[in-house]
Length: 416
Ligand code: IMP
Image (cartoon, rainbow, N blue to C red):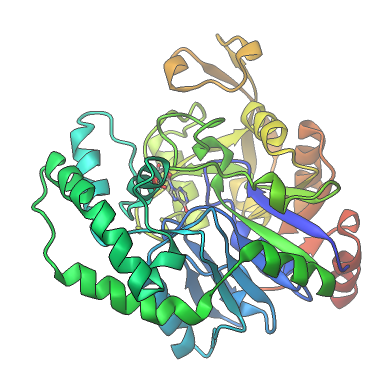
């Protein structure tokens, strides 16, 4: 419906299958907006047997006519974005300025920031975050310190030169402080060239979103999951900016679809109270193909954690639940589900890293051989959210979209 806004957010540690939910919901939508993060994202979409890997481009890219917006809260790596748009073009998905808009207020991931990200991980010694090393943390740190470069400035040669004059002395100090050699001039020309490429795509995300709402539904595509949120997640094992959409993008009455798998996976470090034994994790990893879409790292695997999901539902303001990968449940047979913790005061919310080791999950075994929809419904009831979506495979259409989602649900159910 025109005017509708729907946010699709991860309730776990990321990789919940949000890209697939967004792709399904993007049928007939006007726009898909990314509002946070950068090239650390990794969404893999399978359409008619072909795989598409999206990192910075919103998951609406694979639906004709849907405007893809990279919003003001994002950090954009222009060189990687150009390469991603080129790969999509080679796969037959042409994203010209009429399909892709990048906010002039978004920040630029400067070419040296991935190296700083990697060097800072080494400085953290025995307690690294396990970042994707895509420069996300440094880009948000520079933004907060008022040393960042906006996409708007990058795309105007004069503004770029003036801004570089201001920030370069600081850049050099930071780079030396983490033990890296000062960068040469070659990255300045690479930036200028990337800015020229980006220029036709630059616009204002809020204005574009308001116009798109007049045409149809707008989706806000979340990145990572609540446990990687710097305020509500497992700090310091988090990403550089909140995973929650800003109020300006989320009008009253918007749907917030929280996405979860019937088990959990983690790339990177940090506490995972329901981590499975090595053998069980290996089985989950093979069954679910749980390897990082951006880094290829094997994901840590564990069991579904209801206290964590309830906390994430509260923190995200989720109005509906989507459960993905339910087609794997029969192979799991008896599925451990953590229903409570022992040794933890739940008034403190979800256990952070300081509680590590002192928390014992209490498990129930749920039958994985019931109909996937029945399993997902039991999960939704346990969390207290209406079930809106059940994922049954990686391919487009391998899902059930349920009645609470209104118009699009009706379309999909009749198409089954
Ligand atoms: P950063 O966002 O690269 O700084 O990484 C911060 C934390 O978030 C690390 O533990 C990463 O592994 C994790 N992370 C970043 N992007 C993703 C993602 O797309 N899926 C899952 N985890 C992610």
